[in-house]
Amino acid sequence: MSMTNLVACDLDGTLLDKQNRIMAGTKDVIQAFHHAGGSFMIATGRLDHDIVYVENQLGIAGEFRISQNGAVIKDKENRILLKKEIHSDVAQKLMRDLKEWDVRIEVSDINHRYFPSPRKEGEVAEFIDSSIIEPDLEQKVGVQIQPIIFLIFGNVGIFAEIKQRLSKKYDGYVDFIATSPHTLEILPHDVSKGTALEKTMEKLKANSKQVIAIGDSENDLSLFDVAGYSFAMEHASEAVKQKATVVRTSVKACMEEILEQLKAK
Image (tube, rainbow, N blue to C red; front, side, top):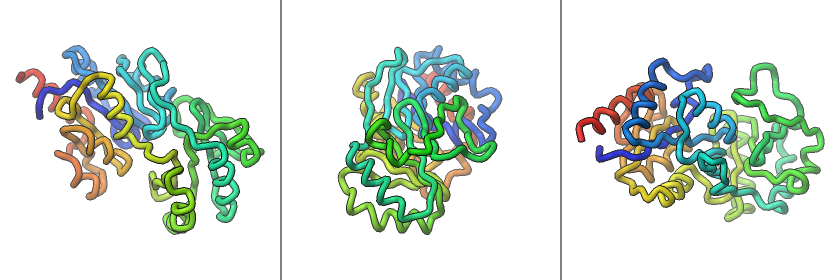
């Protein structure tokens, strides 16, 4: 592990547990890293305001915030560095094509999630609930609502069918990524946490040897590809663990290791 300036860290299942909590002691070690001259940056599928909420909990502000799995980057002054939306025509056609399957479709733009109907009690995991109930979602997508991500709820079998039928048709416009066994995301083509991380590295004039990534799921692998060193969480799948440099139990354990290396320099 060489001199580290930047840590890019996932939220759900990594910095946050299943109850949306940050493990005790993690805040102190992240603050110590900041005081030692490091920059701790969050990269998540959530919307930007949830990153701000977590940063406030930690008592830090990262140089950049990567949200919506790399489609949006904001700096700590709240300026937008990147915003990739699905083209209006493509979004409208997708809404029509997806009607073939009996699935729930939610859409997000830069500030809100749009639901066709309320989610069940306890199903909104966000810290800041920016959801808007929009019964006419199909008519408004690509017109009043400029989507960044389509979130589809279903199962592995349905997702395989959707990908098989639609991926060729929309090749070069959008990508289909399963973010869990129950959720499929449709994002603008070539969007990933890794490409977003590269953009922030350009701004910070950092090379891969100065960057460490921490994550637990397949959408974190692009971070691992860009960073010079990577930590996977112990509960991650074998595929994710194999791609990481090392496996650790928690972000606290990762950050303690990184701090030790910094102090040894």
